[in-house]
Amino acid sequence: MAETRSDADIQGSLQKPGAGVPLHHKLVMRYIVRPIVAGKLGWEKDSEGFGRIAGKIIKDYESLSEEQRTKRVLVPPQFGLEDSSRYWSAAMLLEHMLIVSQGIASLVVPLSKNIVPDYEVEMARVKPKGQMSAQEALTKFRAYSATAMGELDKVVGDRNAKATLLHPWFGPFTARQWHWMMTAHAVVHLNQLRAICWRLNPPKMPAK
Image 1 (cartoon, rainbow, N blue to C red):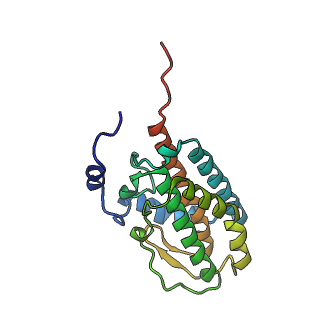
Image 2: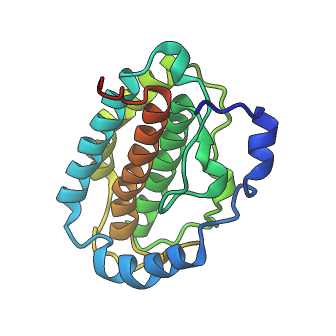
Image 3: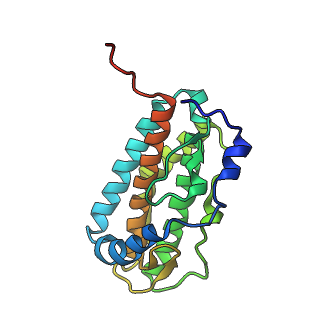
């Protein structure tokens, strides 16, 4: 069924940016994902994963019309997605991907040199402003995702450095774990984008 509530009504019904994820999500992230999953595949595998997921995001984004790309869509709750992030357009999603991916890369480099950045990670800081056009978001994300991992490899230090910086949900992350986070974060938003696409272009029911 099409969403009939106003933007203000929908946004007002959601939690504030930075409110975080449900406690059971956070417990899984902190006590299962961080120690057992994060960064365990290896640097190269995670880099390949980012490129592969970014390609899927671009393909799904391109399946939408220009008008659809800027239409806000409320998606169901998803693992790893803040409540306030559930009502974005596809263009806002790409803008957010750029903000977060570039931000994580800027943390990986000093951590790989055992330098802890003087920075506190706050989810409310990385929300999209919704000011990019649909084409600008696509052009910038495509260009960034095509070169991001290669450029990061040129400047990274010790991939196994022990320095950590706190992720508010997962706990202390090393450079390797933050690098893994770039791909994990992309997976969360690929799932969100697919939910957006489904709402905008629901599959047709077979004729009886």
